[in-house]
Amino acid sequence: MKVLVAGGAGFIGSNLVDELLAEGNEVVCIDNFFIGTERNIEHLKDNSKFTFINIDLSDLESLKRVFEQHEFDFVYHMAANSDIQASAKNPQVEYKNTYTTTFNVLECMRLYGVKNLFFCSTSAIYGDSDGKLMDENYSPLQPISYYGACKLGCEGLISAYSYMNDFHALVFRFPNVIGPRLTHGVVFDFIKKLRANPNELEILGDGNQCKPYLYVLDLVKCIQRFSNNLPQGVTTYNVGVDSATSVTKIAEIVVEKMGLKDVEFKYTGGKGGWKGDVPKFAYDLSKVHGAGWISSMTSDEAVAMTVEKVL
Amino acid sequence: MKVLVAGGAGFIGSNLVDELLAEGNEVVCIDNFFIGTERNIEHLKDNSKFTFINIDLSDLESLKRVFEQHEFDFVYHMAANSDIQASAKNPQVEYKNTYTTTFNVLECMRLYGVKNLFFCSTSAIYGDSDGKLMDENYSPLQPISYYGACKLGCEGLISAYSYMNDFHALVFRFPNVIGPRLTHGVVFDFIKKLRANPNELEILGDGNQCKPYLYVLDLVKCIQRFSNNLPQGVTTYNVGVDSATSVTKIAEIVVEKMGLKDVEFKYTGGKGGWKGDVPKFAYDLSKVHGAGWISSMTSDEAVAMTVEKVL
Image (cartoon, rainbow over all chains, first blue to last red; front, side, top):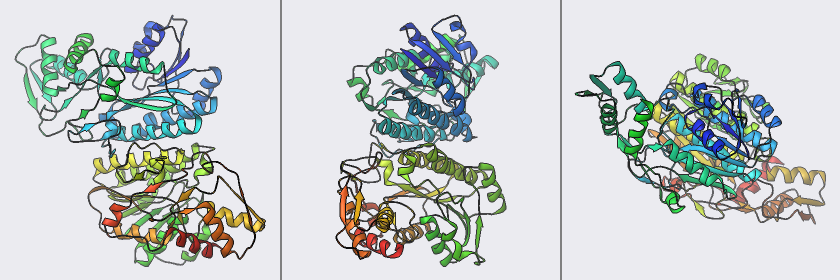
């Protein structure tokens, strides 16, 4: 198969590219290095089945030229602004990098007759359910971050494009993903802070914010498993781990793996870390479990493995 | 109050402007005459409380200048591509005129500290429920038109902007609205066709597509009633009429009001009129009825009154 990975130099995208190449696919990767990095795809530069194109997906005309040159069997759309905390200060980042990129990918698929799509959605589309268990039909959908808002808009687009153009689309809503090539988020921040000062660690909130962390290689395997046999229309799954890890627990794991002792944790206090953050949520994974997939690591194991890989 | 009506020269917008002026408000109206017309606001040109500005809302910089010059208490965002059938052929119309206009309005509200919003949403965000009764928490939301998709995206944005910036937002999801100044849709089309040929009428589909039609002045009164006392956060209502009118019934009303006889109805056949059209749906209005509002006309009465006004 010839596939496009949009955002393929990013954290999840580049791990997916590795998996797709390992399976024998021909991969065209688009990235503008907004969040993705050259380092993530450096090891592929002599791979004859790998083509890299540096364009900005928010530029429709550039993207059209790629679809003119290549006939894709499948599009994996992994590009988005994934740094929710950054876009909380400037929603225009989400408009451009999350919504517009998705619109343009869908437009090119429509215009050039590509029928198969994988899309990275997010638990952020649900908003703050205050601990209620969220399955794929949970409602109302009330995102509290611009990121969640734009991803919900993307899901709406995929629904309409799928109906109007007979696309097969696979949508995964997943929570925090961690692992090799991670570029931001709490695990990343703690390591950076502790390298600067190994005696104390500032922790946003009260440390009780508890989230499931999914290991990136678990996710990538899951994407491929379900992409290989897509039904007509849109198929949506919550994908994640049953367990969760508190911010304090993450701090403890990082401290331990870094071999530090007597680190003082300084909490800023409050419910959430920053505005737009969802302090606590519970994900109903019955559907994906029912389809025969389960993550290979717990949330704590994913955190520990990530710290080892990132250090 | 000083209010902005974005899309105020349009069908619903201009009827709302009349109502807002009648209540004594100072109204700034923005329109680019994409669908709105100069004729809809012609009668207001000597009204000292009315200001018209011709800009394209998808141009953020132009819109910022308006917010710099005026301090608004309330924004009514009525601008969108409302011609679903047209955008079915070109989704870029929805991206620009429905989604981007909304994003820009919200950005300006955030940047200039305006806290109160009314937004026109639509039953099209629900998709095709195949006759199931849809209340405000109906799920899953699977729009089948680009219009419904972009409006769902707008609702997502409003949810996040409201949370992040303490907006009070009123969102109405309504079905087909008809009445004076209507510019497109089935009533409009039938009149046009019958003027051209009073002997026969082509009807898309099998004529059984049955939808509730809401009279525009009913809608405008409802907007004002609920806008005057907005709670914190986002408040969403289905707004509509309990009854519905089939396409064949509309044809019969138009024929009767035009004083025609022996008109032959020619059906194109099939379930829906065109792809992306929702052939049949039922709206749960318990919430808005519970809040004390009910439409003054039935769907059939709204159709009949509209034909009289448009003829």
